[in-house]
Structures are given as C-alpha cells and as structure tokens.
Amino acid sequence: MFPCMYDEKQHYIFDSEVARWACRNAPAGWKDRLFTYHHEDTGNFVVAVWAKEPFWLLSDIINLGKNMSNFNQVKRDELMRRMWAPDDPIEMAKQINQQERDFNSQRMDKQEELKGCMARRKE
Image (cartoon, one colour):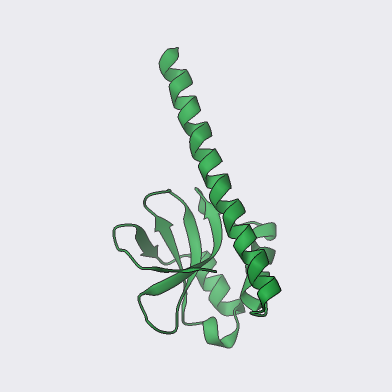
C-alpha cells in the first residue's frame, strides 16, 4: 500500500456498508481509520485507510472498480488478507504487484470504454 495525499477534488469520501463491515472485521489499530471513497478521476470505488500520521495521507487497500456491488466474496477475502497481512518485504512486494495489476486493469477498462464510444459514434 502506497500512501497518497488526500485531495478533496479527487477523493469523495462517503459512508458505506462495505466500510462498516471492514471496520467490524479489521485489526484493532485500523478500526477507526477505514473508509470508502470514490475516485473522481478514474470513477473507481476504493476501500482505504488513513495513515496514523500525518493525517492527510491515505492508502488504498482494495479497488472495487466502477460499482460498489463488485464487493463479492473474492474481494471480501482479499480485503481481509490485506488488512491482516504482516508488513514484511515479501508481502509488500505482492501488494505492489497487485496495485500495478489493478492500475493496468483500470487503464484497459477505460480504453475498452473509449473504443465502445468510438464504435457507437461511427454507427
């Protein structure tokens, strides 16, 4: 999990059942720091955690994509694994790789969406 700075223009924070569920099932140090936000640039919903200090930093835990209903059993299990995972170098490398895959997947989704728009315009 890489921290990033909170930006009210990009991160629309809101309460959700997913965040409440995560808080109920999180390790003690995370319970009051978990939340969900909508990323205005990408259109994705994300479960994130506030850094302990400084307080304006956040880290994405799991990307739910463009629809909150994507929170299924697979995403739930992945969220639990990430919340309870030890902070060791091997685990960190796995998380970095997952974030890169998530980012690339988002880019591919956006490209497919644009291709669909272009195809409809040609019709």
